[in-house]
Length: 485
Image (cartoon, rainbow, N blue to C red; front, side):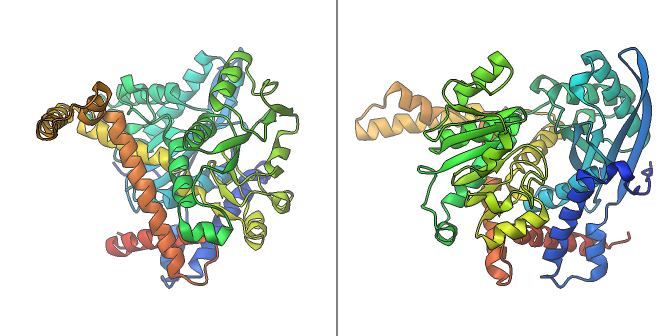
């Protein structure tokens, strides 16, 4: 079936806010990188352009009244299929924001060598203001709209969770798609981020935060980079502030703390907590679950103006909330030497120019928060292969390792302890393999970006190097395929 394509719509006056500015920032980053490259202007324009934008409106009964819901799905690039990108549920969503996020997904997938084109979706609603039943009806209706326009499917376009959505919503989407496509053997591959019981993959929930940890760990162990920034090697003496304590922020903070760093500040929408001697992330999470907020945590100082903590002293700042949090208004007050963009677009283009002049390095979102799409790729592969990772080789590995242990003990005359035998003898299960694949991807991609940076002497920041890396890969794909097949 031919794909129904709608022309991109210009932003209305109501969209002239954050979304438009975000899209402008992404295009400024792209243009800055393109100036260092020799690809034909036509190929660069094709890479930059958003191929398809679907905008739909449909009625929904909310609190007893009929309301018209606006929703979008953007497919930025078809150089690789399927397209891939999350669905956010937000009253602030607009078409420009969706286009910007879809374009970032294209570059993100290219940077981490995931064979997808970029996509993104949004439903203009606050999920906290509707009942679960209403939210389910809206999600299922949105899915039907995507099905009718051929904007969802394992080989076409594969959504995932984003701001305001999670496993539950992805399960609803998968179920709706299956009911409309009962003859599609790969129907579960139409969406990722599902519960494990519904075809999800173990390790997906923690993936983005874990990827942030792997990327930061790689950076602080980069001798040349640490020398450039005037920082010591390793995580052991690093003080970190995290903005956002949702899925990404919580897991990033958790893994960074386990890696040896000290989390001194956590920022949320209703305030922040700060303790220069460190915050126990697990204890703060328990407090949040018990009270509904991170504020008034006994082991830290509560700061009512939460975002002011972005400007507090620290070595590494991890903005893992929403876009445009570091802007021209606060960029000159940031004290961190290294910023890891756990969120999409937390630094505006204008703010980054200020940070670069101050010698502050941003590890770009297109790389550092790519853990989600990497593990989504693994989930998609699992759905298409119809077999759990590790199922065929786990016991073989364990039997081989057990035989090896017995041989070593016999030769050395030394018996291992039960804990040592368990550690060495176990075979890899699904989560082990997923985490290993994520770690390998984040390490390899980091060094690809840094090699690009070293090669281009006139490039002064990691984001531009990342864009160059992505654009090169996409341009090669288009050149091989032909721009207009």
